[in-house]
Amino acid sequence: MTGDGIFQLFAFLLPAVVTGAVAFYFFRLHTRNEEGRRRFLLHKDSQKNAMPIRLQAYERMALFLERIAIPSLVVRVRPKSADKNAYEQLLIRTIENEFDHNLSQQIYMSDDCWNIIKAAKNATIQAIRKAGMSESDSADKLREDILNETMEKQSPSATALAFVKKEIGEIW
Figure 1 (cartoon, one colour):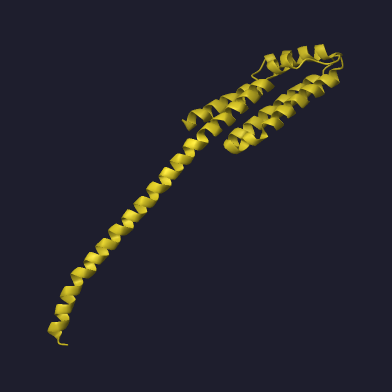
Figure 2 (cartoon, rainbow, N blue to C red; figure 1 turned 60 degrees about the vertical axis):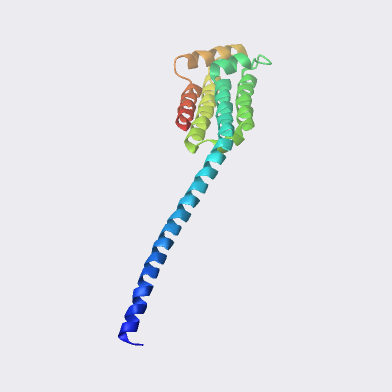
């Protein structure tokens, strides 16, 4: 093969190699774009299916926070006897049972939101225990003490509920 033949071979191969490289580049670009589109559609579809479940979890936790708010809790859970310690334990057990019933909802919400809900539950229990240390001698007097002590400040449930509402607003 002469130098002229090699030059001719190179002249024929160069456009084929350039065309192949351009085709490979565009094919790879198209494949990546299609993969991204498929991922987006899958994510969109999963969001469409998961969104109602997430909203239901937030609804349930909002209901939980409303139910453990001290004014509604004390009105809803009446003492079974005059023993203030029994009533204090009944209130705490009611809160714990409500919480246990909604424990699985944590997988649908952020860690921050779940931690705030747990803190609200614990703060409510602490407020009940603090009122239980008072000099009251009956369950009815304890109810009054609990209500009087919590009327002056915002309840932990209200603070947590505001955070839940804010987080739901960020979802939309």
